Length: 322
Image 1 (tube, rainbow, N blue to C red):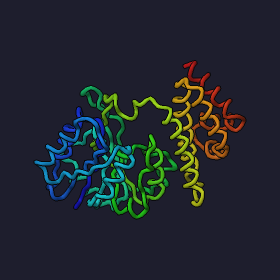
Image 2 (cartoon, helix red, strand yellow):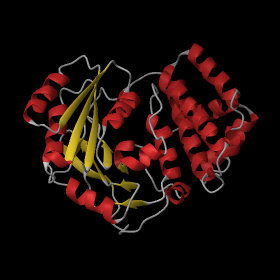
Image 3 (cartoon, helix red, strand yellow):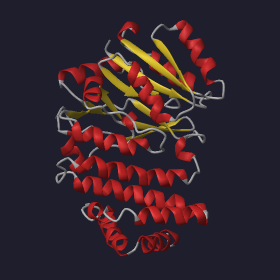
Image 4 (spheres, rainbow, N blue to C red):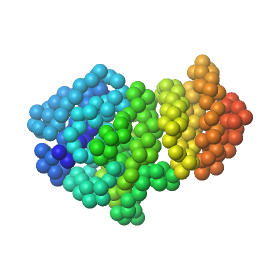
């Protein structure tokens, strides 16, 4: 089998039919690819829609689990996948018609571990280019080079992977955290030997879904970002990383600033105190952030070294003045 499309489903009855339709309008024979739908314990009518499609299309595979989050739903799909290539597609998004054959040929011809794809943003039915790679050509890079240049995207759905590559490196998603792609993608690119870019936009990222994770107001998101930093620190401990330290420093800076934004706007003093305690227990964040090529993150690293509390005060002043 050539291709496995993995679609976790939770509270997307408004979007799932459109997603499935796009995955079915492809130029591969139905026996050459599978659509693995993982029911993450959705409480709405999404799975009624999926089951109706599965009755008509033999290449739709349904997997069931209790609500355990996006990471474990993707992992479940990856366990079941039989295709040479894997695409993690979010259930409120859609893909371009008749794109799988050319993507497969591109992956095979270039012998790729990963292929980055251009993305369109969809807002209330209007599609605009989010980013593209029209000048990339057919060049092949190491993942570590792209890491060092910050020439990759965090969302897992924006990269198509070789299943053999993922399984050979034990690459799965860390369970029960928000923003799991911040943890997964840098590790994947660290190991990838052959990565290339696709020129044609083939993924449509839906921004109108107010129930998506990105619209979730929860301080857990802030603490999960600190957990991702800890996981990356552990990942790098026994590996050479001088060539990618600046990249991880930038990732840490993004996670720190995103988490500061969430925690400072929550107004929850108990959560704020707990967040500061966790920051104080991570003094070596400085050694990574100070290597970032982003001057703002580098400056924040020096403030963090003086005091995490001072960093929080600095963040508030800067963002209140905008």
